[in-house]
Structures are given as structure tokens and as C-alpha cells.
Length: 567
Image (cartoon, rainbow, N blue to C red; front, side):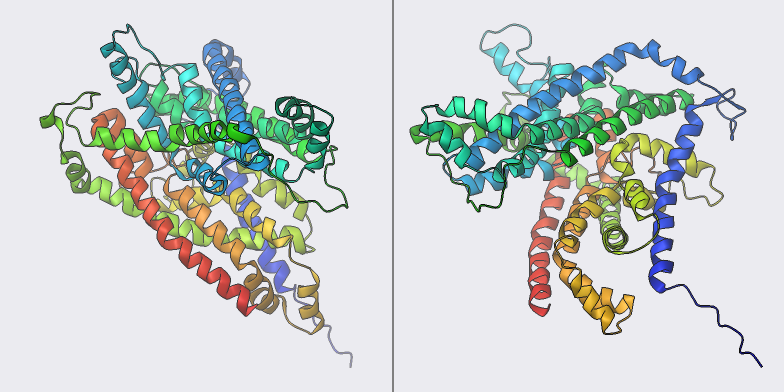
């Protein structure tokens, strides 16, 4: 009697990996589908699914040409300034013997951790045409009008560039560190000066890296929301992201037109990031060969103190001055440049701590940050492994899907989620669960990129040895891969936690009355209450994030060292 064949079960790797990949694809593509559906909807905007589809919403976009022009002008100006900041500071800190170089390099990363909202609020207090501290001092010295105005295109671009300049610095400095310094030394040997060497040798050699940084930063500027909302909205200066927010927030909301704007912005950003990947992947300016070299700092003599001043000026404008401004404003009843003694008070801090909405918003943000980081690391760690190490069919497509949110402005993605989950049969719109889904989804690229950077450095033979010894996939993952990946996993956890606590674009449209988070709550306070109270709230948020970093970083370092020693 023949023995019936036993149907082989699919391996656990395929089941778990396929399940995670499917969930990630649904979280990413489901809102995009509804965003596209809303953009092409014609007829009654309150009917879902739409009565008909067409291009009417896109045909109305030329009526908003001024907003399109504002967006492009701000993005171009901000990108140019960010590249100047990034290139100068990267060249100074990687190629010269500037004093306190290590300290300056660490301080250059601080603008990334400072909430962009904090910088926008501070510069609104400094550079508002009528009430800005700088303009008050200018008029007290006999000047007329406004010395600076941060509520227009140039001012908004300036504030955006201060915080994106650190991103350009990181990207360009990485390229400069990999360049053979003997090329610059040869230029100086034949008589070229330092400036001529920088322009004729250094800049051409790092041109692909600078071009890649320019494309990436420009895409980020196109989708920027915080600075344009805080600085431009009071003066009715709109870019695409703030126009989308106004269209959705007004009554009645104009969802289809907002969706068409979002799709157009998403399409441009997708093209820019596609070009960025092509430029980075297709770099042909090879400066690192088989000969070993060690970058050597160029001796610039007494000029090094001038270069130190340039780097310190950037840190001062992007970190020290905004903090000082908010502290100065938060301890005044009415923020002015020349306050009387009886104008100082701590009442705004007492008010901020007494507001139950603020306390609950901060608590929600910390809880969301913890669970987003924990769940996000678990999901992105597995996805990174599936993309780099597994034989899962379609893993290349999976990589494009999980990196997709990087090409979508978070406000636009939140609009797609709002439209999608309003019609979902389970009522989670306006709850903290939807914010958790949104945060995990938009931070997929951050987690995958961070963990992949560590994973590609691990030799595949370590896992293959375990497989040859008969260890199951789960056992190999738990005992070999995860201990070796621990530094990358912990770094990704911290980055996702910080990004979640300070997030604005993905939450301002999705939070409900009982699921408020701190950054949108601060924005609401800015438009509905005093600037002094808003300054106090922003400082409280920053201090909480700083304390969390001070507590978590040593724990992460200790866990990483323990993981390395045990491995």
C-alpha cells in the first residue's frame, strides 16, 4: 500500500518574511492608493468611492501658479544656502587643521536633533518684520523699517537651510574623507594656492557627492512643512505643503484639490530622489584606489581661527541663538527686545505644566516614540535582512516599497492615510493606533537604511556556518545575526524614537481630541495663544528629548559593548 505523500510545509523564513513584507506593502501602498483616488475624483467630493474619475483637479493647479512659484523659489534658495553651509563646513572640518575640530564635528550634528519647529519659532521671534527682536534693536539704533524679514521666501529658505545644512554637511564630508589628499598636495607642490586648490581640485573631485547632496536636499526642501507653516502662514505666504494643509483644514474641506497638489509634489520628489540614487550609484570619479592613504589636515596657519569662526557661526545661528531666544522670550510676560524688570516671569512654564492637554500630549508622544521605535526596529530589522540576505522572491521590489515613504512628503502621506482610514471598517481614525501605524510607516526608510548599513558589513559565512550545522532560521537569527547587529538595531531605535517624538507632518492631520501629540499641540498653541507660552512649550519638549537622549545613549553604548563582547 503506497504511503501518502506528506505535503512539505513552507519554511518559517518564507512565512514570516512574506507576512512582514505583505504588511509593510499594505501600510505603504494603501494610503497612496486612496491619495490617487482622491486626486482623480470628480463629482461630489463627499461621496466615496468617487462617482467618476478625471483630470479636473489637476487642470485647476495652474490657477495656483503663485504657490508653485513660492515652493520652487524657497526650495532653490534653501538648497543653495544649505549646500554652501554644508560644503564650507565639511571642507574646513575634514581638510584643515581648524582648532577643536572633533568638538565642532559633534556640534554640527546637533541641528538634526533640534526640532525644526524650535528653530522656526525662534526665528519668528527674531526676524518678524514688526515685533522681531533684531528689528526692534535695529529701530532703536535709528534704523527704519525691518532689517530682516523671515516671513517671506528668503527668510523661510534661510531657516530651512540652517537645519538642512547639517544633512548636506554629513553627506559631503563623507565624500571628502574618502578622497586621496595627495591630489590636493600635488596641486600645492606645483604652486597652486589653497583657494585655487579647493576650486580646481577638491570641488571637481567631490562634484558627484555634492550633486547627490543637492538633489537629496532639494527634494527635502520641496516637502518641507514646519518652517513654511510657522513663518509663512501669518503673512499668507503659502507653499504647496501649507496650501494642502489649509485646503484640508478649511470648511468645507477641498479634498480632491489638496490630493492633486499632493500627487504633483510627490511625483516631483520621486523624480528627484530617483535622480539622486542614479547619481550616487553611477559615480565615476574614483578617488580611492588600492593604495592605502590616511587623510591629513592642511595647515592653514593663522587662518584656521577664521575657519573656526565660520563653523562656530553656523552652530551659533542654528543652535545657540534659537535656544537663547526661546529662553529669553519664555520668561517674559510680553516678549520684547528691551524688557523692564517687572516684565520677567515664570508664569508661562507654570501654565504649560498645568495644562492637562500638554501633559497628555507629551505623554502620548513619549509612549508613541517608545512603541514606534520598538516595533519599527523589529519590522525594519527583519526587512533589511530579507532584502540583503534572504532568497525571498521579489525582495528587490520590497526594497523600493519600503523606501517609498522617503519620496512622499509626510503631510501628503498623512493626507492619504486620513482619506484611507476614514473609510476603513474598523474605526481607528483619530486614535493613537493610527498615529502608531503612520509613524512606523513613514520611518521605514530610516530604520532600513540604518540597519542595512551595519548588516552589509557582516560576513554571510557566519550565518551559513550555522545553517551547515543544522541550526534553524529562527535560531540563527536569534543567536548569530541579532547579537552582531545589536549596535545598528540600537542606533536605529534611538533615531526612530527621536524622530517620532518631534514629528509634525505625519500627525497634524491624523491626531484626534484624545490622541494629541506634543509637536502639533505646540503649533496649535502658536496660532491660538501667545508666543511666550509657545516658547516655553517648545523648550519643555526639547529638554524632555534631551533628557531621553542622555539616558538612552549610555544604555545603548553599554548594550552594544555587551553584545560585542558576548559575540
